[in-house]
Image (tube, rainbow, N blue to C red; front, top):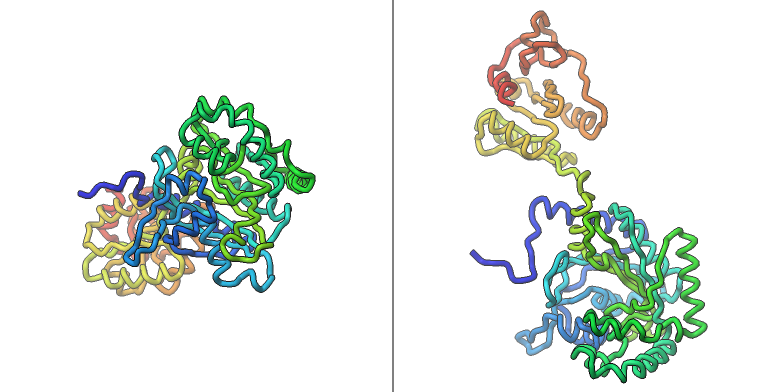
Length: 473
């Protein structure tokens, strides 16, 4: 036995279905916004993150998985994906054509060496979008509204959008000066991390989670008092547009985000589960004015984006039973009555899959009772039974496992039959189509007659094994 590496987890079986559902929902919604998929490497040059995320960030200082490869190059497992997306856009000269914006979405794993906790792992999965090459408050709103409505689509109702403005370069310079002056008289009594932040980037002190330091931070200057008129106008346009879209928000002066490349608008989506558990931000993002230039792109190109942690989304959705309607059922379970019909069963199941029906087939020679038990365990909608008579007549028995009605269907009509029955909300009422005498209903296949013996054939030959399956199930 080998144990999992600390901070990692297996995502398997039904849990994997939940991850797939969340990711597919976000991807499909991103495509409605005309975002295009980008897949970038998990490993990048360490310099990429040091320049983009920032040397003063906790991610670079404490959390990156960095190593020297066999060529003595410093390589890092990506702690976030935005930097890699922008590098890809620059490397592929997508901004050189001037056809802005470049709209990208991504899904993939990230790695941070941090303390594992509920909904947070050292290897985690992230979904995100980037809108690169533009400077517009309305593109920022597009990114925010995407995140807001995507979370609504997943079932989150009581969302809290926290938003703030970090201002332009002049605003941030003035604000840093004010913070430096304020914290100067307190820094000796603050934590060691804050002492380092004071030297590297004083804004990072606002991220401190130490309770004693938070009391000092409460009375620190607010960024809103240092915004230039240009930044105020930009921020007000964002807020007005959010009002017009009906998206409620809370202005949070302490929101600065943990990545150094942000400027002007930053935001987070917060949510508390029905169990009262808070997972922090479900999604977050903001505007960046120098990131593209720092990575080698045009200096005048800006952008915005957001990212969501899939683990956190899945955890909260499990808490609030938002997966209850997730359909994990199987359309068909194909059941050959003996080993000699397994090839036919495999051919039929292959045809079903190619026609869009989620199917499984028994190829292990199980008994009829065991096959019905397996079909029920897989939550199959139909059992498709193949026996000697079905091979002779080129037909198959289709049993609806919810209504327990069954009928013989020609192989050539099987796909049309399943099309008309699977996915319908109406009950499957079938008129009797057999030609046998119904007196006593001993040989009837349609199951519409009281006291029938559930035979499987149209022409009066009662099949004992099917009667037994009815008794056993």
